[in-house]
Amino acid sequence: LETAAAERAAEVERLTERLASEQARLEAALETSAFERAAEVERLTERLGSAVAHEAEASRRVAELERELADLRRRPELDATPRDPVPEPQTPEVGSATPMPSVAPQAGVVAVVALWPPVAPGGERVTAVSPDADLAARLAALAPGRIVANLAAPGALEALAALRGGGWTAPIRGCLAATAHAVPLGAVEAIPRPLDADAIQSALGAHAARGARVLVVGTDVEFFAALREALGRGGLSVSMAWDAHQVDDLLAMVRPDIAVIDLALGPREVRPIVARLATVDPVPTAVLILGTDPAAPDFSAAMTYPAVATRAIALGQLLEKALAPGEPVAGGTR
Image (cartoon, rainbow, N blue to C red):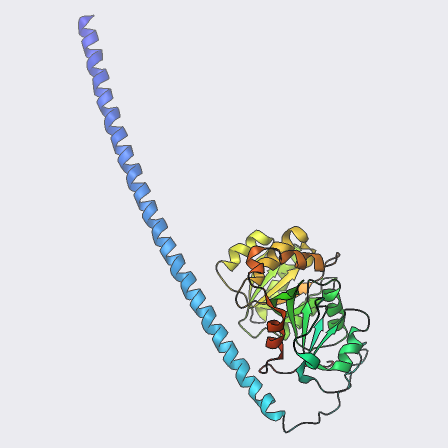
């Protein structure tokens, strides 16, 4: 028995030593694997940072080239203006419901749609127009070279959609205003429902050159996936998002030139998306697809976000920028 006990004790000691050896080997292997994984993560992080930096630099370069191209395209039009003081009469599109402008668009005249603070800056060159049934007629009489629309005002976005539907192609700049200060936005296009891929592509056509970056936000997966394929075939770079969180993630990596937003997403998603896009510099062109509810409350609520409120400028400054020369005048009907 003593011999058997001694042999068993020796066996236990041998097994214990083997277990300790195996445990040390496994710990070393795990430590090596963790180190290699950390190194791989660090390497990939560096590559991602480098790629993002290159993308940002490329985006800035593309924006510069697009501005230079726009300037080159604009110069012949500006040079031709003094030599063509009397424009030829335009022929309205068949079936168009929009009245024909009585005079040529005037570069120094701005129409402000639904800015509820008193519009003092600009004097006779700035006219406030309410977004009612007579909007097209008022604009036809004014023949403004530029239109500034307060998207936070009730009925403004719906009136712009009706204006576009009637055939008007005058450029429209957006802003958010509730007091004597306003948050400037980029160019704005408003499209009524139902979802129409042709209408969206037509609205993009006035703003999107080949290679432009487009952000599309909507919940109708099948429709917007098909739209993405169509826009891709047209030479546009399209990113998709389905909610405000995904928009934040995308904007952290790339700055879009155009944002297509389906306002049927609802206030919970639309308000942070509008606020986030309003802080992008420069603000992308907004192609807004109307939802079933009024749009103004969501745009008004977006002004309460601190990041948006800090971008507000005096209303006079905003209108002075709108009056500044340098943009081509486009007005009237198709």
